[in-house]
Length: 111
Length: 119
Image (cartoon, helix red, strand yellow):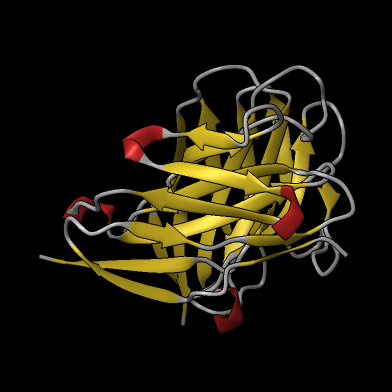
């Protein structure tokens, strides 16, 4: 069955530090891949998506993600984290007619 | 993108009662979805609601418990029936833009959610 794994439940970084959130998926072919962010008390906002083509995808708020087929990964990165980035981040895949979400990674940012 | 609103934003309900959640979209969309996010957990798809057809429910969710209406291309409701404390969750409405009728390749946009607490 298709699945999404986000190994890190909780990550804490200092403001200005770099960030990488991990996402691994299980699927026989290349699915469509997404990263969403959920700020406290808010709905989900799409950060970026990968359908095909260039494996390095740029998103909003300075985020980027790299699709690595050999590792079945789609890790999210940001070179310098801002305090406003503190939120819950969800990786999702769409292998067929539904979105499958990972369990999320909660990001905490210290000043 | 799409602007999605939900009503109510939050509610506290007594067990055994029912709550209807409304989802309004600012544009016409074919595919709408309802998700549940239990405390501290990820999102789980409840059902897909396409206009003009009955909702399609995921495993573990049934129409008697979560009846859905989709009267037009911009509106949907989800009812949580005969509630118990286990129904305490955030319920999110989502839409997929595009006319293909299939989620594959479409981007989903989410509403702000309805936070439900059942006592």
